[in-house]
Image 1 (tube, helix red, strand yellow):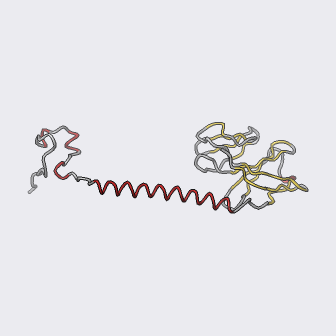
Image 2 (cartoon, helix red, strand yellow):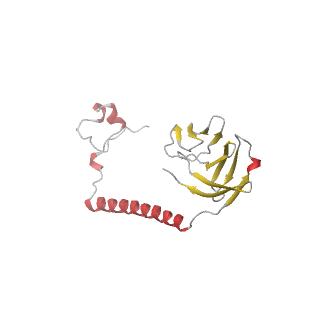
Length: 180
């Protein structure tokens, strides 16, 4: 035997449940059991939330200080000039093995290198030197090969530029330029 449904309280307008609009039957408001939030609880919530924001900001500042304290990244050999054909590209990691980069040869003696993570959501960008662009396959972002600046798609910031030096036919990565 099925027991009939019993209302636990009366809706705000005092009408029985059968005469209520459909939205109120689907989402009944039980005002008799509505929880009252005391001022003290509200202030506690605001204090804890504000403290969380402050801690987050302090951690971002601390990470920036740690990054600056590390100093300049080491000079690293990337490739031999003869190994990269005109219009070619190679991948390498700089300044550490967690940071993928790409080196492209656009004209006879011009080499450019950028971080290979898209500035939108960190997908790997792929060079298309013939068209003069880097393509991000995730959200169709397009960056200019000669400047690293975004041309189309969701990215708004340019790719980080890797500074290069050529000595005795060897290409060296010497630093990272973070740009806005």
